Image 1 (cartoon, rainbow, N blue to C red):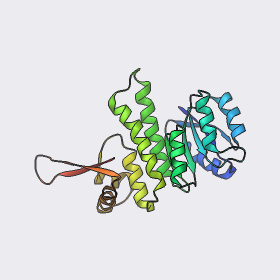
Image 2 (cartoon, rainbow, N blue to C red; image 1 turned 135 degrees about the vertical axis):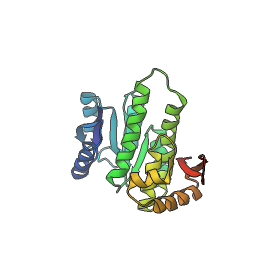
Image 3 (cartoon, rainbow, N blue to C red; image 1 turned 180 degrees about the horizontal axis):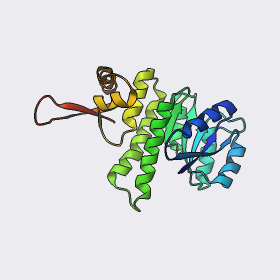
Image 4 (cartoon, one colour; image 1 turned 90 degrees about the vertical axis):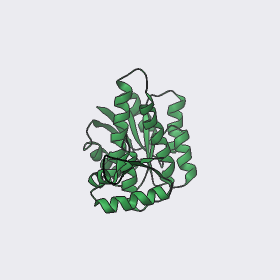
Length: 219
């Protein structure tokens, strides 16, 4: 199980995140902290693998808190969760070691996709002392995705983008439609729009007969 610590100054929001973690296979919430000071104590006591980390903490900015963990060599990953949408904060989170950046408010599906992607990445790393190119690609794809989080997308488009980002391999419109719960034409329309925005790459694949099937991946 991936031990996860929720760090958020809002008790209600922290509880929601903890409840969401319980719904995702392979994750367990080992605790909640509402200040940076409490989070440091919890990390030392509980040794979590992952933080769900808010930026706006009452005693310290979440980004500087994450930097201090890096400087101390604390072996913990972090998904930054915040209402901040400015690109400078997104970049600061990336440079401080955040593996993803979620903008509040967001739905459970967006969080689930990122958690499952993280779980697959950890499983691949844990299965071998060396990382093959596909494992490395997953990690760097995640960091590239976080750079787009400062761009505001329409909610359905964001869900579709997150579903593509959460897949370790390119996916078709039919697969995305099933994952997100929309019709195939709707999925295709949003995928096309995301490709036009330069956020997705398109790969036509030809079968033995008929028209090619388009597959999409995060650039």
